[in-house]
Amino acid sequence: MPVFLNTQDAEFEAQFQILLNAKREDSPDVDAIVADIIADVRARGDAAVIELTQRFDRLALTPDTIAISSEEIAKAIDEVPSAERAALELAAARIRAYHARQMPDDASWTDEAGATLGWRWSAVSSAGLYVPGGLASYPSSVLMNAIPAKVAGVPRLAITVPTPGGIINPLVLLAAKIAGVDEIYRIGGAQAIAALAYGTKTIRPVDKITGPGNAFVAAAKRRVFGKVGIDMIAGPSEILVIADADNDPDWIALDLLSQAEHDESAQSILITDNAAFGRAVDEAVDARLKTLERRAIAGISWRDNGAVITVGDLDEAAELSNRIAPEHLELCVTDPDALSQKTIHAGAIFLGQWTPEAIGDYVGGPNHVLPTARSARFSSGLSVMDFLKRTTLSKMTPAALCIIGPAAETLAKSESLEAHGMSVRARLDRLND
Image (cartoon, rainbow, N blue to C red; front, side, top):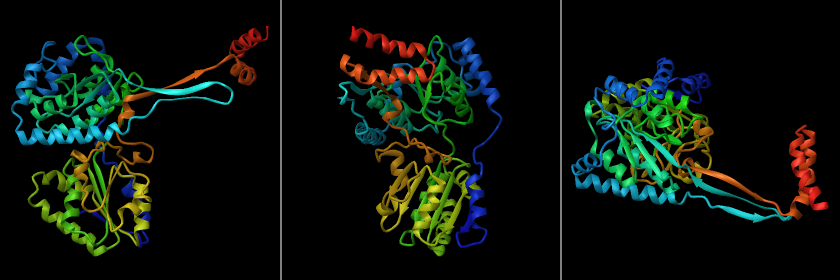
């Protein structure tokens, strides 16, 4: 049974703090193991990757079979049913159109001193996308990671996808082809992150690594950050639904379960201004858990991490939502647009009862790679901006340097950086000759 809280109870704040601070991530001591794996890959390259893949994925590789060949890709893609192919193509088109609108403009202007200033955007030269593997791998994640990179103009995209026992998900390969991926490697875990960051004889290093993974992948991304860029450290999935009584309890129950079925550590929270409705949703969850395919996982998630919170009004709901800063936020209320103006900390907001979060996972258009564990307080979901760099531009004329140069010289002297000031003064003196 999930925890039931009511803001009117004297113990609410203490109970809410427990909910906020509960550690849901699996926390095995993986960092030392990951450090050894990264060091091994750096030292032995392909040989280490092959050995680790045999150990963890029960798959024997050679340098020639680390990459999935174009012939294998074509054969696997032929197995994809037409309905699933069409669904992937629709999703890709919508994701591409949405992210194309995110592309920023270059800028240049001349200010009152006569200096020309501006900035220019350019894509990273290469990106590596991590895709969890096996039959449980998610082709939607391929689209969500690869399409923004291609829209941004990244010329080289490499994917690593573990294939335990040699199992390849044809949908992942089709998604990669649709998204424009250039290279696909059948490796996973911390060794894949190390190979993407440092390179091996077979795998060229990349500049940015994105994509979700298990605790070992997350630890590896932390360790290679600085050598390469990363998107974020993703934790267990989470959803917060704010709903009034004018909703079908079964719909809300299914929305909560849509995240609970991801992982035993996932979290689903309902905030409502009607206690009876909250109980009805809990009953609907119990009913659905009796038949849900992933009921064992979803049931543990709902029992251990779920919550139903009753509030006095929707303003109070918005305040609690901002403290939770959820990955996914559904606003199933009469005026979701108005409430959304008050919910400022969320990875993605889904407006109204006809917009289930699951639409966002697949075909809505916005990215489903989102900040978790309350990091929506200070970060955003994946976008084209993750694959772009902004370079500033400055151009002085002699007149402009005469106007602003002396101030630079003064500041350099105040910081005891003599050569800084002299580099400006030398030019000013030339102009005064």
